Length: 128
Image 1 (spheres, rainbow, N blue to C red):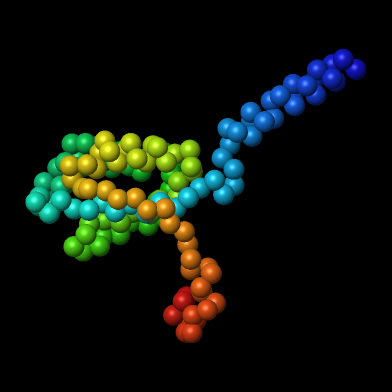
Image 2 (tube, one colour):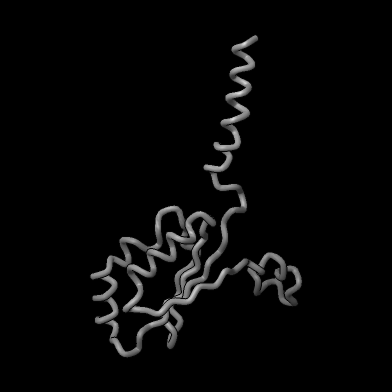
């Protein structure tokens, strides 16, 4: 009986700690990042900075997921990541270390509105 009680006490103490180490479902956000080109530099200069600073080796950081990565002409690149809340700092630091100099950055928390409005579109065939 004493052993069972000891195991129960151990589990009661350990379970909350185990729960905190795993991200909760829904603990992720979408983060849209504008990498605005420094227009005083040409493409070769921007790419040289990215290479020197290890941009593609460090961004996006481990534990994040690329949702989309687009070029917006006249602005630069727009990257949307799925980021666990615990990795937000890692994204910020990776960009500070590797993107600055080639780009100025802006961050926007985002969410997917399409599932909400899809049924409201007048021409649903265009929504596919």
